[in-house]
Image (cartoon, rainbow, N blue to C red; front, side):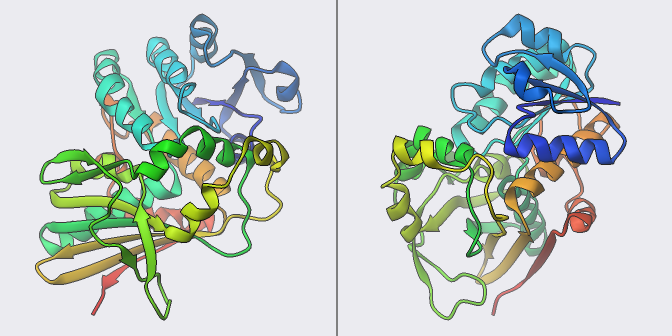
Amino acid sequence: MKIAVYGASGHVGRFAVDELRGRGIDVVVVGRNAERLNGFEAEVRVAAADDHEALVAAFTGIDVVISTLPDFTGTGEGVVRAAIAAGAHYVDVAGEQLFVKKIFDEYGPLAENAGVTLAPAITEAGIFGDLLANLGAARLGGADEIVLSHLAAPGGEGSRGSMRTVLRNLEVFTSGGLSWIDGEFRTGPQPQRDTFLPPAAPEPIAVMKFPQPSVVTIPRHTTAASIEGVLAKSIFEIVGTVTESDLANAPETPGAPAAYSMVTDIYRDGRHLRGIGSGPDAYRNSAQLAVETAVRIAAGAGKPGAQSPAELFDPVEFLDALGEFGITWTLGEVR
C-alpha cells in the first residue's frame, strides 16, 4: 500500500505523514516546495497544485492521495482532478461546503468512470456530522430536522491555514451557505433555530447559520425535511474583524491543541436525539481520520465515485474505531 500526502509540509499534512509512518505504510510526500519537503524520511515528489502534468506524475503508482491543503477553494480542484487522471483514490480534509458539493456534483461522475473513490470532508466536522446524523435518524425512523454545530474548547489555537480559509471564504461563511430544505439546497442567512444549547451549558446561546460540510453529504443517505449548520453568533463577530495582517501574524503551527466537540441534533415527531463527537485536537484528529479513511479505501472499502462517510462505513463500527485517537462519541435522547 502506497499513500501520498499532498501538502505534507503543512500542519495537518505532518500529522498525516506521522500517522502513516506509525502504521508502517509506504508514504510519499508531495508539495510545491522541495525545500520544505526535505526534512521527511520519505519519498519526495514535487508538484504545484495548478500543474496538472506534474501532479499526475506525482500521483502515478499511488493507491490513495490524501489532500491536506490549508485552503481548498481555488486550489483544491487541481489535486482531485490529477488523482482521478492518475487512477488514485482521493481523500481530503476540506471544510469548505461549496468545494465539497463540487466534488460530488462534478468530480464524482468522473471518478466513477475512472474506477476511483473520492472521500471529501474527512474532518472532525465532516465525519461526526455525517455519521451521527445517519445513525440518529435511523434510530428515530427518520428525521424532521437535523442541526449541526461545531464547538471549540477554550484555550485551543487555530492555524494560519485555518485563518486563510476563513478569509478566502468570508462571504460564504457570513451568508450562511447552503441548507437542505424540503428536498433541495437553499441559500440564505437565517437559521430555522436562532438559539442553541451547548452541552452542559446553563443557558442557550445565540447562533447564526453556518455552512457545515455535512449539510452536503447527509441528504445522500438520510431523509430529512431540514438540515442546516449553525455557529455561535459571537464567533461571527470575531471572524468579521480578521484582516490580512492578522493572517500574516498568525502562527503556522498552533501553540496549543484545538480540542472540540461536534454536536448533531436530530428531531423527529417531538423526539430529540443529540450526538456528540469530541476529540483532543481538530488538526491531529482530522489527519488521523483521513489516514484511517484512506487505509480502508485502499483495502477495498467504498465504491467508485464520490462517497460520504456513511456511504463508506458502518457508523457505529467506524466511530468506535476512533477511540485509539482519543476521540469519543455519544448518541442519546434529550428530554
